[in-house]
Amino acid sequence: MKYYRFLLPAFLLLSIIGRAQTKLSSFSPGAIWPDDKGVHINAHGGGILYNNGVYYWFGEHKIAGDAGNRAMVGVHCYSSKDLYNWKDEGISLSVSPDTTNDIAKGCILERPKVVYNKKTKKYVMWFHLELLGKGYSAARAGVAISDKVTGPYKFIKSYRPNPGQMPFYPALTPEADKVNCVNPANKSDGFFCRDLPGGQMARDMTVFVDDDGKAYHVFSSEENFTLDLAELTPDYTGHNGKFIRIYIGHQTEAPALFKRNGIYYMIGSGCTGWAPNAARWFSAKSIWGPWTYHGNPCQGPDSQITYGGQSTHVLPVAGKKDAFIFIADKWTPKDAIDGRYLWLPINFKGNDIEINWTDNWNLDVFKK
Ligand code: DGJ
Image 1: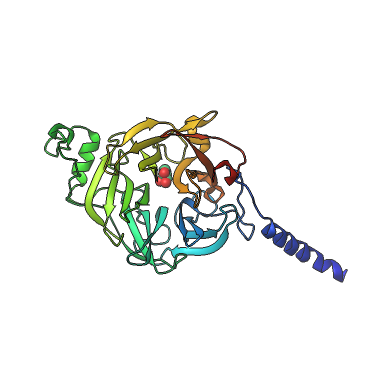
Image 2 (image 1 turned 60 degrees about the vertical axis):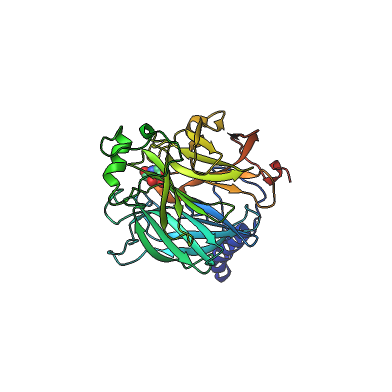
């Protein structure tokens, strides 16, 4: 009898160790994705930073149930050298127990993105922040910094970007194409003008660092009607006042930006809450535009709903040419922690992009 008492714990221990030791060598979009402890990765709406030969995945730590989309814990970080196997690095930014803090436990903290500033040698995390108990009305950008990539990150501030600033327009832009706050031409312009004194709304977002070290914050603004692309200050912890408005009035969310052969690409989505819709892509020869809309990059069955997902990041694979991974979240709002990740390779046809569904794939699809 006494031996039986040890059988169950021993079996559980062995199965945990067994699971933890299973090495992955491919991506299975939409499947449970176990970390080094055998637990499904909890980093939703995430972004990935490649730093000193290691990838760091930062994302929203969700909890079980339908309240799970509120930030009860913070931003979760994982690390990987091969992109298939991820080590749990813990919580890199914790929410505050102080209910008056901007990032109070129970607030909404979405789509965290971390970039490294070579000049200040700091890691800078930006995220979309909604204040505790105020639904989605605050629409702020939040920023936190750390000396160490995995954290802990220290929250600095949250605010609406670019108060009092008009958009940047290239020389020779006709007056008729500029926003006119005396007589706003459409709904989106109206929201822009309404928010001009206090700063523009900032919801779904990404951060992109260009080859020259300048960083840009791209965010859904004007009640999500328009995307703003705004330059950050040299230390990456603020906005310098220069920004453009992209695809005005067409409700683009979930922006993800990347660069290939000197061309800037952006993939985003429409605006349908947690339900999936068709992805959309844009390209531009200059970060300041003009940005050209190209429609849906996804092909085949379920392409009209991005295979059930919504973009969050495009990851350039280190050391491989033309190797970019489209990363989307398959949200499960009734049990947020069960959200899945869709990683799919981006195919280039000249300067056009295409995304196709595949059940299972690995990095060999990319040429060296
Ligand atoms: C879609 C956004 O992309 C998500 O980040 C989140 O804000 C949900 N909407 C909320 O409905």
